[in-house]
Length: 78
Image 1 (cartoon, helix red, strand yellow):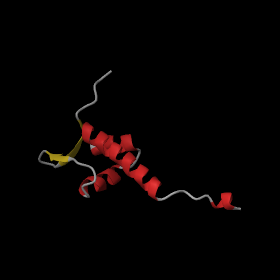
Image 2: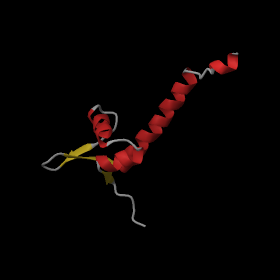
Image 3: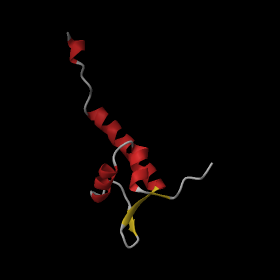
Image 4: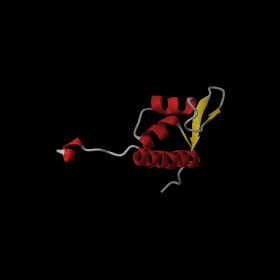
C-alpha cells in the first residue's frame, strides 16, 4: 500500500471531503483551508496534515454549534 502523499491537489481534497473542486478552491481563497500555490501555472496544493487539522477544526466548530443551538423537535411538544 502506498503512503499518503504529503501534498494533495484540490481535486484530491474534494474527494476526501466529498465536495466539488470549486468548493475546495473557494475555501482556499477565503483562507479557511491553508494551501500553497506552486509552479509557474499556480497549481494549488494542500498539505495532508493541514487537511486533517481542518477536518478536526470543523468537528470542534460543529460541536460548539450544536451545544449553543439545541435541537428542538416540534413533534415532541405535542
